[in-house]
Length: 333
Image (cartoon, rainbow, N blue to C red; front, top):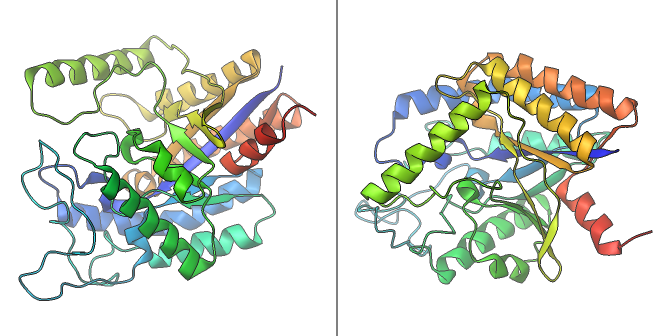
């Protein structure tokens, strides 16, 4: 049978962590600088093995600077705020309101310039999509529809005005899906859905029930690496008319107490399972991850090499989300 490999690369830097109560800001700056250094190597590997990626860009990174109206103003006062039960401070509390030179963890216009420039000249068809403006949690009850619309609208408009890109693909922050109807309002045709059979542990409320569910889920995920259980493989589904989704199957990053070689082995297991079952293996990672661990690049190459080999054998195809949606929308040939 023929399987499908789909690679997502989320570009968000420090914004992917703003839901946390405390951040090591100097370390995030160091990671963001290393991620920039690793970006060319990531691009070189994609081009070497002919692997397309669905790049999803966080809107705030499209800014090279931002500022407050006055010293007492909150950042981005034009944006609605969430009402998360677990958040007691302003969502933009970490936004330094400076520029990319001063705080490279919070701005990334230079990164997006390089990605878009690569995508435009690459021999491989890539996607450039949307990852919201400030990494809000769309599936949380504290994220209302007004906020969801503002997050998608701001990111889509920045991509269009600065790069002429009409974003067709969306990745929900933390894969926490909600307000999917909003996506259609802004021309989105596909999104990455929540990984299948993940024990529900996404809500961040500080309750005993949520604590137990969260750590039980993490324990089960931890065990899956050591008992060599292959990750899920998936199929696309039409979540709303004209709006398709593909769940994520494996986040590719370093993990506590799990050697990187096991994560890489699990990714290769997923690719092989997709081939056996004629399904999709959807792997996702973050540019930030390559700044956290230098070893990630060498193991990433092992995965891409395996993908390329299976493609040459005729057992595996590669798709971006937009390509897949076009095929699904056109129906059987």
